[in-house]
Every structure is written in structure tokens, then in C-alpha cells.
Length: 283
Image 1 (cartoon, rainbow, N blue to C red):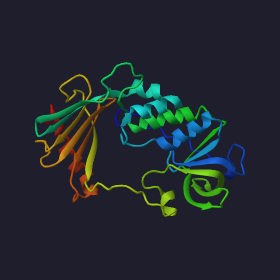
Image 2 (cartoon, one colour; image 1 turned 120 degrees about the vertical axis):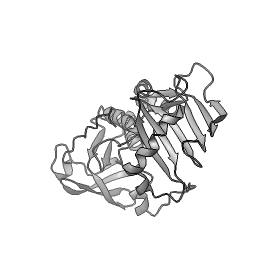
Image 3 (cartoon, rainbow, N blue to C red; image 1 turned 90 degrees about the vertical axis):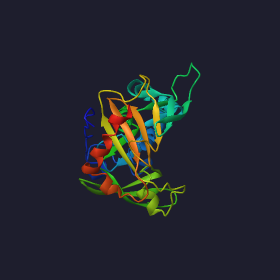
Image 4 (cartoon, rainbow, N blue to C red; image 1 turned 135 degrees about the horizontal axis):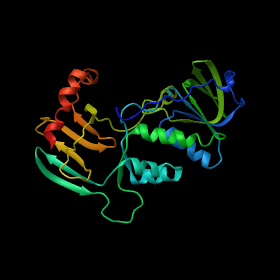
């Protein structure tokens, strides 16, 4: 995003391959994935005095807004981990939403009508900010959290009372053992696939085009940020659309494309640019 500076995290040789630090024969907890879940788990463990090593195949926060709506319960958890206030300060607070059919408003809601709550119903904040805050918080626990970027877990072995992970890095490959391993490597988790564990749940057959659009002027009719959802809007006939405001004058729009759409084709610049001009018609 234009207003966010993607600064890569330092990549250093792990102690198992001759880097600085003391090599351990076995770690209490190994966490696979440095997204919001993996980082939050590491920080939570550290607050309880439990060491962990975090392994991630990348060395930069998520590109694009990705998860943006953080609910009140989640914000309370992040508050306990020490990043809730930063999220509240940076994020866009909202609690009301409006639903349209075409141009007609058919429903609206208020998710937190009472006053006196420390955290709002929702805060909109791009996932890259949340990951940045969690990394910075994790770095405060240098003796308890070992952050290893560009450390890709490619295999694991269950030895009954401990787990052995095979890890690839720019410096070579090494093995790491842990009492417990947390698979925080996403919905398409390679760890879960190696274990033959399905991701149970319902599958929504539609495809969506999700775009982050920078605009100086708000398309909303009110100065208070809201969640807007349309069924069959004039600017996107026969489908649905969703609009959220984010920090830095970034607006997230989700456009339903239907089950037959080819995601790779629809994500090309020639397909994306004409569609995001619909924002001019929203206000």
C-alpha cells in the first residue's frame, strides 16, 4: 500500500547453522507461522514465562489488507497481549452498518448501542499493521521468543514425546526439536496437509475481487465510518458488494464475481481497474 512502508525483518543464520546464540537440543514450543495467530501465541506464552521459537518462510508482514475487521472480543485479547491500545489508536472504529438492495436501504444495525466499553464493536485495521505491532511486542521478549524469518518448515516427524521439524533457510537446512509444535501456517496449512487433517467446514462457492483503494474523499454519506453492503447494486449488477474504511484513506471493497470466475484472470490489472471505478458511483 502507498502509505505503508514494507520493511523486511532481519534474516540471520540460526544457531543450529553457526549463527549467534546458544543452540538448544529441544525447545519447549515451536510455532510454525508468524502471522497474527502465531505471533499472538508466542507473546501469550512469553507473558507466562514459556519460551518459544517462531519459524516463518517470509521476512515481511502480509501484503495487502487481508484481515481488517477486529471484533471486540479479539481486541480484548490483544489488549492483554499489549497491542490493543495501538490497534485502537491507529484503526478505524465502527459499530453501525447499512444493507442495500439496489439503491434502497433495507436494513441497518448498531452492534454496540451502550456506552462505557473500553473497546468498540469493531476496529478496521490492515493486517500488516497488526503483524507489525505483534512483531515489535515479541521483540521485547528477547529471552523468551526466538523470531526466525526465512526459516521454512518443510517436514516434521512425530517422535511421540517430542516433534522434530525440518527447516530450510538461506544458510542451509537444519532440524529442530520441540516438546510442542503449533501449526499457525494458515488455512492452507502445509503442516495439516502432511498430517492428513482436513479443514472441516462449509465451502462458499463464490469468488470475490478484493481491492484496497486509496481515496481522499469518503464515499460514505456520514462522517462516521460504517459498514456498507449491497445486494444487486447498480454499479455491480446481479452480484453483491461490500465497503469498509481503513486507516490511511484506504477503502476496502469486496466485489462478488460468481462461482465461474477465474480468480487469476479477474485479479489482473485490466480487470481490476475498471471495477474499482465503481466507487465513484457509490456516494
